[in-house]
Image 1 (cartoon, rainbow, N blue to C red):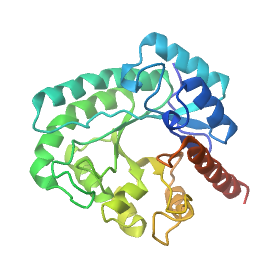
Image 2 (image 1 turned 45 degrees about the vertical axis):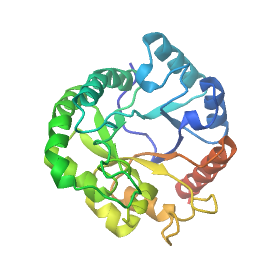
Image 3 (image 1 turned 120 degrees about the horizontal axis):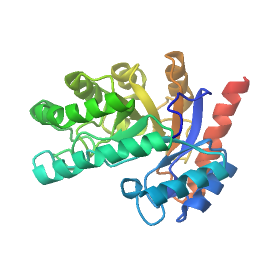
Image 4 (image 1 turned 180 degrees about the vertical axis):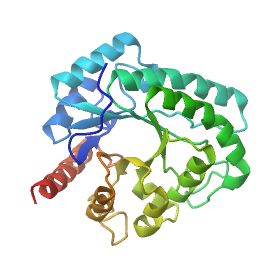
Length: 279
């Protein structure tokens, strides 16, 4: 079993392997060659996704990661992407969690990415749902999972994702406070929250300060991470705010477009983090 310990460095460059190549082996090679020290596991894993990994698959994943000197930052599961008013969906997602815990422990990460139900409003990210109306159902859903996570020493990280009930940092904080478990944290997708109308700094960061366990990095219109979307706020400023509060985790490149664009984003991120460490 891998060690469930914080990253030795400060912020580690990370990337979703399934957006880099069809084959996991090739994805890992490219990720390592372009500056990644960690990866985020979601899909394209020997013909399945992360929720379908068997023990045999797991052994192949471990061997491949070791071959390229990579570690797993987070299990990028779809846990919680279900409708709160469809009991069969809810039950199926609850049944996934014990396996996700085992995978996290075997792969040496304390982090599992998850969600707090689909946004019933649908539409654009800006169409935020009535969180208060669904909050009791969210608490009922997440409390038993949080207890499992506490017992296993892992953290369920709620992603800021506009298609779900927690599109903003403020919404994530409301859910975490209502559940009341130290085993819940935030996977802060800064641009996702921006698309829901929440500026990254200081507005978006204040509610999740001390709760961020993982970060997603998406490009601006120029395919760069110099700014978060069309704002004047840079990712460098976001990283500085996190580091000042003791953040030790990964920043993961996601949804940059083609595999080539993903790797270009990874190189930009790796260079930025390298300059900061040597500066």
